[in-house]
Amino acid sequence: MNLDRTAASPVPAATATSVTRGARRWTRRRGVAGAFSGLAVVGLAAAMVAPTGVALAEPAPQESPESVYAAALADTQDLTVTVKGAEITPLARGTFEIYVKPKPPPPPPAPTATSGSKGKPSGGGSLPPYSGGGAPAEWMAAAGIAQSDWQYVDYIVSRESGWNPNATNKSSGACGLVQALPCSKVPGNGYNPVDNLRWATGYATGRYGSWAGAYNFWTTNHWW
Image (cartoon, rainbow, N blue to C red; front, top):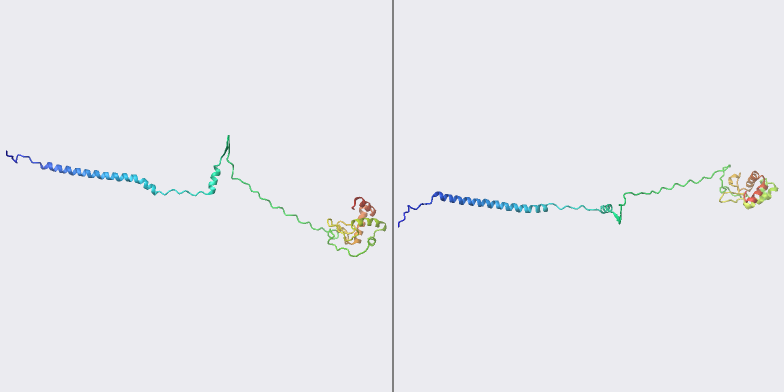
């Protein structure tokens, strides 16, 4: 049997070209799909890593130091004491009182010594003591006292000063034989026995009428 080569039908050239183009299109499609898949994987990884990176990038918040006073103040403000069956309100605070001790008043000035009618101090300390000597009878006679009154004068003077012309009462300042008070009442010198007795005669007659009256008062009251 003879085969006629002319009888076989050849493959059309157009069909071969179509096959080649289809293969090229399939290759391109696979490349584009692979590129999109890679981008998707990269995007997914970035989405998973991004929050962690942001969290690591943000600085940790720093807590401000709390002072002892602030802590104590907060504890005091939040303090609430309760008793079974009752509630006690927090203690009011924030007020206080200061007591200022007043200054003591200044002491009063010391009184100055007043002068008598003759310009002499009331006490006899500044007067010169008597040193002229003599006896009671001589002093009474020189003072002009009658002898009939000497017994009264002797009684009073013996108990007032013991016939010591320089006798002085430290508490009252009375001076001389009859303890004249104040000593400045005696004209001259209260320690001079004659001046003292002369003043005493005027005092006895002016207050009690006589030396006898002064004697009667002294024996009853022990002063005159």
